[in-house]
Image 1 (cartoon, rainbow, N blue to C red):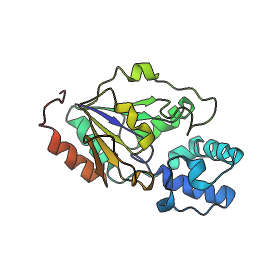
Image 2: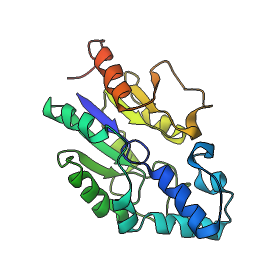
Image 3: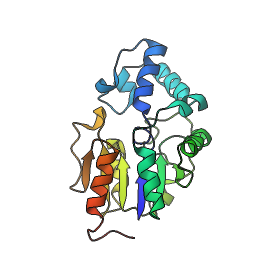
Image 4: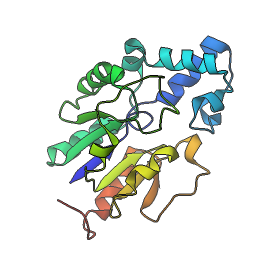
Length: 208
């Protein structure tokens, strides 16, 4: 079984952290539950320069290592790995964030989960002039049975996988989004993700 897992706001509470950072840096008062746009510049109403400063600060190693785990994430993924499933953490973070991101995973008991940095968003939500470790061409050759993702901007990444089941982690910025197919399922926590995947394991089209 091959599983794709997004990092930010699936494994850790990045949105909440950025909400606090934006308030500290610029005095913006946009609580997490009011972050209705995945693009942080739009969500917080920032100028270009402020947006760049926020992203730079949020991707500093100390900041990345401080992000709180989404409850149940490491326990669920560790269970999958113990069952022999292959888990790939595919993040939109730039490659400059790889080492602290890898360290975060290791500290949370996820040493066996592979980590890739992919330019998911065409630079829309990443530090300018960044590099990435996984090309889109190489990503398109990867096969997954299930995915855990929160960003509507990333849903097109699964267009080449007609049999994939996508667990959409419920977040304020995806609540009004219409899912692109019946293979997308809204989940409210990691217990729900585990339950949904367990229920669908026996369906045809899944590579084991």
